[in-house]
Length: 452
Image (cartoon, rainbow, N blue to C red; front, side, top):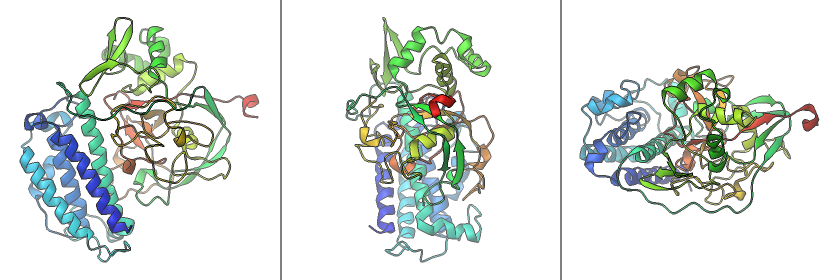
């Protein structure tokens, strides 16, 4: 398959998912704000089209604007999510027509790639984002700009999926249950000390914060073979974990108190057990499935209670990518091949995490399971640039967030698409956020005797 064919297929596959998420509800639900943490679904839809217009139609294609008059409405930096319902947004029919028009023009631009994927044109023209000539060339190399737009739309699809989870009312989304556990997974895995290559300089669609590849020396440590499960987290609750400040940082305890946190988001106490509301359905929590919808502070408190800690970002990535037999870093825990349904729970194929042990084909060489998919995993690292970082193609994707109040999440969730998930992919959010599909696993440093 040529690059042009691959890009066209990814654009179509991604747009079909956007349609599922927006066609599932009526126009009233599309324009309603289901939580102040989220935009109305119709904003996300038109924003997807606006970004595609900015980068593919105007900058790569050099075409005249489709709707330059709405740029300010869909600039995520100009308007907080809570304020977006008050804007004169495109209505559902207008938004659908807009994204369809933009897509037609983007495909016209794509047709100017030859079958081998070599650019036959120079990016730039209208110059809406003000990229330099060198950046313009890089935008078309390996179809990067198209891959960036595919990933952007998939990221907003996951955001819209999170909005659906916060939506009240009867279920509107459906999917088959995740597979059962195929193997028993538990305990911890020793990751020997040593350097590994973190990040990437070769992944063609990797985003700027994943670059460049660089050597990182990591002392020996133990990491959980699987994410923390609902049953394990329930034990923390039952032991009074939410009532004892010993397990929490000062910041975490303050947030727990102010937000009246008592359990993961969407959990409901039912007698002596727990139920959870998931996309309009309420059912008992699955004991051996990874816990989801916990914030960084909750994850860190659990780890402290358990006598452990959260892994650092480097520890997480080494566990996910380093192959001790060859010394090289893989694209994924299982190797360099793309994810499949046997390796990871990705892409909204299921609407919940799968039980621990459901994906043995996706384990790392050392036997660490479900590092990709199921739940985003909080790690105890701030969002900072890698040595040699260079913003591309614009500062607002990563650079403006560095050094702020953000903690890292790695690995993707059941709502993350394969196009927006790899061993180097970096996600970040405020440590109080838990509407996202976030879980965690724990780690501990190895003693000299254990690492020998």
